[in-house]
Length: 92
Length: 200
Image (cartoon, rainbow over all chains, first blue to last red):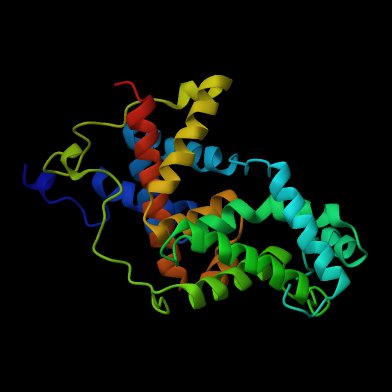
């Protein structure tokens, strides 16, 4: 019992693991911390799932694309461009 | 280190040569992220629009002098942030990170720190195209609800695909602050997806 309570300093728990995910993905953990994190993942399906969800969240965010400019705005930007071409240094 | 080929450099060359469509493409590519960033510095959406408009004018005027030492997008966003700072009521030279904000609601862990209420599953649903589109919409909305600083970092890193160095340079924040903001922003987005799409 005493051994169980006295978690080795090297062990991390789930509550800590979720806070290390970004450092892990950014390669910002020390080699020792990285090993601890990966050791935790190896024994914890929930944190493994959590990490996979964070990766999926990043991938989904990366797929967001701006909506197309409407034709009015396109015309405005084209007009801005032409004013600049006509007189590159004025205030327009 | 050889410079990476900059996907926007060709557009700049075309703009210099008089191609208006190249300008429209560049605007289209970056306008939404610029608006998202500007909104973090100024009091209203209307002022953010003005800052963005003003930035594009600054881009056109700077076109001749731009030497492509930085990437085009770093240059664009640096102009934007400078103008937004000037326009903004808030002086944001230093970024206060604020109190600890857990990635996951602490009630979901037992006293020993293990999951009591583990992550609900939603990854399988990403394979369905329609669901993935709903998830993207959900992220778009959730982005708007992020605290401004988190939104800025997530926009530049995860939507624009900038490196952490580029983001630190554009926003003038430290590497560590950048990572903390990224962590909080991404963690919130994950939580929103879990809440909307998760199954126990």
